[in-house]
Length: 403
Image 1 (cartoon, rainbow, N blue to C red):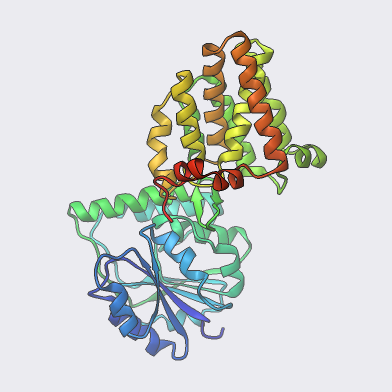
Image 2 (cartoon, one colour; image 1 turned 90 degrees about the vertical axis):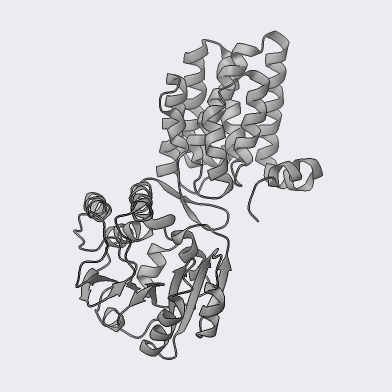
């Protein structure tokens, strides 16, 4: 294989090591651009990386996987080498390993923990792909152009390496591990070290679940299905229907598109969610309210926090549960997670069911009429575009969201 088109380093607060890492990479791969994705560092990481000869992409603090995903966009087409900011050692053998994805395995044991995160990573990769890795968490990786296409954007946080291996194996690519005499700054058996490894473990687990790409091109975990846990059975059923759409949906969008495509997960939602509402309320109006509120919040879930804010406003009006939405809102706004159809539909079901209990007679049918009008409007025009054009709604929509 040829040298990589670029070397990508994700770094946060690595001012003590980044210059040496960049200099070593430039020496090993002369003529190859070194790109440092600075993940919201509060020290001199970016400045020292630039002085050492790297091109720095300055980012908000989002997490390792998000930094890699955004930094990769700045790299030229072709093969890509990934490297941690605190690495010591020669990575050239990865480029000549002859694999689509070549992963560096440390010749000597690194790290001061008990190996729980690493064992969990191995188990997750094996369960999802059948591949048995030695170093599932290694950040030193060479990707061919084909592997880069299939593995980017990377999963969020420290789960990016585990999911990358899974994606590569399941795509039929050749994955190998190359044992190399490498070293890096390891975390100890102290509070900081255990916290770091705990985040690694949690991120790896979440990265192996359902993921989706948001408007910014970040690949985030879908966590909205959790709203269906320990909830009303009707909400659980609606969340399950939405999760099916998250996992198996096609490119269809909107009622007409789904109906024209035939038997799709979108059609399952169109039929299944109102049916759940009918069974739960034993009223036609209940079926309409549950179906329309689920669809309305789903239409709004195109920007971080938008659907959750609409839900909280509606929940205060009709007495729907607030807890789950309040807990998810900061993570959704910071683009750490996404609701997905499971989450937005579950919130809609909670709002619809509470509306049936709170609204009666004319007020219930007025609500149905308003929601039906918004649904028809959303079929013809983007509700998000209308929100952006309305000053008051635009300010509320952007409140708390990162630029």
